[in-house]
Image (tube, rainbow, N blue to C red; front, side, top):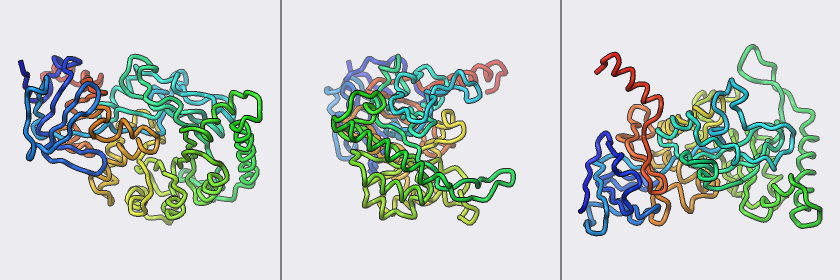
Amino acid sequence: MMKYFILSVFSFWSLFGLAQKVLYTDCFLHVGNGEVIEKALVGVDGNRFSLIKNELVSSIDSKKWDTIISLDGQHMYPSFVSTNSTLGLTEIDAVRATRDYDDVGEYNPHVRTQIAFNVESKVAETVRTNGVLITQATPRGGRISGTSSIMSLFGWNWEDATLCKDDGIHLNWPSSTEGGGWWAEPKPKTKNKKYDAQKREITQFFELAKAYAEGTLDFDQRLEAVRSCFLGSKRVYIHANELQQLYDVIDFVAAFPFAHPVIVGGYDAYLIGRKLKDAKIPVMLDRIHSLPKIEDEAIDLPYRLPSILQDQGILYCIQGAGDMEAMNSRNLPFLAGTAMAYGLSEEEAVRSISLSPCEIIGIAKDYGSIEKGKRASFFVSKGNALDMMTNQVTLISVDGVVQSTSNFQYELYLKYRKKYNDD
């Protein structure tokens, strides 16, 4: 017998894992690629989307579906993606035993975050209830920090949570300057006298790695981890912000045949937008809730950077690396909301944390937008998910399986509200 559900505050437990062919009706669909369907039909068959249509011009054959669910006008979004994050690799920043993202040594491309990822993280539990369902677990420290992996925030173990293992290595480009900062009368910025020597050291390492990729050297664990950057789909994420750094990164990428170079940070990228576009290097923008890096810059420049790169035609995404970044990953939708307030359209802002990061990290074939054939990972919110006043997630689906929308913080809220009879 056909089952119909009208979803309000979601007593959804009876549906967990039962239905194979589910049709969601009457939803305001944010596709993720810039498109919107204000009254959409979204069909899920197993773990993939099987139908995306406008309800106003389409009919429903109820016999084709095990379950039909009316979302009553709520907003449906693809999974939001937190890139360049230590989420899942740290629990309490002040407790060293919970930090598993930084290893000893300068050149560690063989250090892999995949096997360190903690699927039972309490922090991750609070992040996913804001719509962030995928993270790029990223190492820190050294000149080459290690190799990141793309992980789901739902899974039994790190193997089960892995969406793309070893997606790329992370190279921290040396700073061309020293000094500066905002606090306690900082020293004026001066030229980094070791900069040229540090660049040569990087070039020598990658020349060695290139020779190894061509098969002219004996097995080396570090070089083996870089091999796919030349021959396969593995990315090279180059962390750089300053203008001089970005110029040198473009020259560096031109000198080596990397399959997929990416700039992480890119604060000054807007100054050389044409060169980056011509070089086809995407940018993962640093957390835009920050102060300008130079005193003479406009105070709202960080907020406007996504809009500027959008206008320049550069592929970019928004990420939230910085202080307390694991727990602050929950604010990723609101970073995009700020970018929307400072120049992006709503759907461009949605794309900047859904499809665009998936294109940059290499999983757009299956994730990032709600399109036929892609994996059915999405969430539903009562209102605009980019606004902290209206982001209220009522449904989460990961590969077609409905997941809990609760977390321990909300459970504590209910516990103490009941204790003190706060209605």
